Structures are given as C-alpha cells and as structure tokens.
Length: 315
Image 1 (spheres, rainbow, N blue to C red):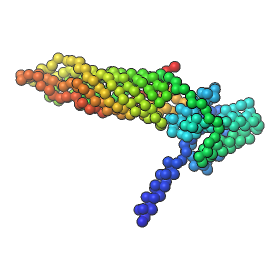
Image 2 (image 1 turned 45 degrees about the horizontal axis):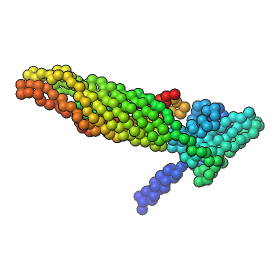
Image 3 (image 1 turned 60 degrees about the horizontal axis):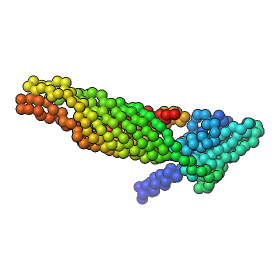
Image 4 (image 1 turned 135 degrees about the vertical axis):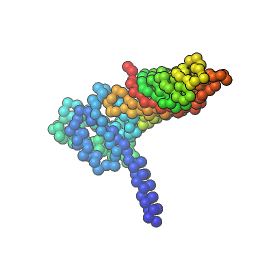
C-alpha cells in the first residue's frame, strides 16, 4: 500500500510539473517593473525565466524575438515592457497561438506605473495558464531565408586511428522556417594507429544535408556525401615494408541529431551533434611482406560521430 501511494504521488507530481506553464520575461530597461512583476508572479504556478538584453526598436522585431525565445525555451508566453513617455506598454505574446496582448499604462508616478504594469502582466499570464485566450491574433509571418555558418571539431569512431578520426568541421546552411539545407565540410587531422605497423590516417568529408528543426533547439538531419581517407605507413616491423601512401574515396550517408543552445542576447549559439555515418568503400590498412600485401585493419562501415560547433547567423 505504501509503495502504491508513493507511486501515485510521484505520478501526480510529474503531471503537475508537466502542466506548469513556462514563461520568458525580457527585462529590457524597466528594472522597477521587473521587480514588481517578480512579486506579482511569486504565488502563481509558473516556470519563469528572466532574460537581459535591449529591446528591438520595432514591434515587428520584438514579436520575431518573442517567437525565437519561445522556440529556444519551450515557453508558452513571452512578456516585455516598452517605456512610453513616463508610461509603459505591457506586451504579452503567445507565439504558438500567434496572439499578442498589449496594455498601455499612462504616465504617472514611476512606482505606480511599475505596479500597474506588473498587475496587467500577471492578469494576462494567469488567464493564459487557465486556458484563456488573450489579445489579438497576429498574421502568420512568411518564412524568411536566413544564412548560418558554423565551425567546430568532430570525432568519428571509425576503427582507424587509435584516438578516432578527428577533424575541423565547417558548415554553411540556408534556413527557411523549420527547414534548413547545408553544405558540411571537414578537414581531418593525421593521427596514428599503432600495432605491428604504425599507420597514419586522416578522414575528410564533404556532404549535403537537409534538416528539420523542432522546439527546444533540437533538429534531425539526413546527409549524404563523400569521404576521403589518406593513409600513410609511418613504421613497419622487420621483414615488412610500407605500401605506398594513398587517398581512398568513399560514400557516406546517415542521420544526425542536433541540439542548439543560444545564451540570451548572444549572437553565437553552441551546437552539439550526435550522428551515425554509414560508409561504403571504406579502405583497408595494408602492409607488404614476403607473402605479399596483407591487411592489418579495416575502417568500420558504421561509424558513430560526435561534434561541437559555434554557430552564427550571417547578415
């Protein structure tokens, strides 16, 4: 009975946590209103994140930033305050519903204005949390093309070099709405595989990718392209000789999972990648002795790959 009761409590707690509405508050240049808002929201069942940074000059740009913040944080509502000649406009957006609530607080004593703004925001958030609809519906914005560039480091576990196949990675992508299309390049570092003979290997690549983006910074990608392995024998045991160094092309396809995190207001995002490459035409590692050429190892057909990038939007 006790175990069952504990299980029920845990389920209920989990359900309650899942139902907690996530909110992002942009602090902007209204510290007094933000202080009052913290107090007004203290007794509400909300998961509130406060972010810094200056507000955009136009309402259209503020709404676009609210949409980005909602996507990045999995938030239902975004709140911000716009000073207006001693008064303030209170804005609450629910980007998933394409709705915007705006309440203008007239000029008055700064303390009174801040308190009124906080009360207006509280009322709007409480209504949203209870399932209500606020504000006016916004027209769906047409998807815009954006250009992104990233640079980072990746490692593939390919069964070649002892430390894996390390490479400098670069990616240029065009994004439109939830879809992105990229050109991915990598330049491999020569690393040793030690055994009877020491072989130096590098793995470089060029691929085209299509990516579907989701909330919370996650994306799923499918890519296809070409690999180039460079092999050179560094040392061999007595009685064997090195086969000539060679470049070996191969075909690579596979899925990847990406997760991107952008600190509030930062122009640069950090992206982590987990991928699974399937390689056709992977090379063998050969040495030559009296009996002829013999293989001392092969490159794996299925290769897990991990990466870490810095990502920036291009003007």
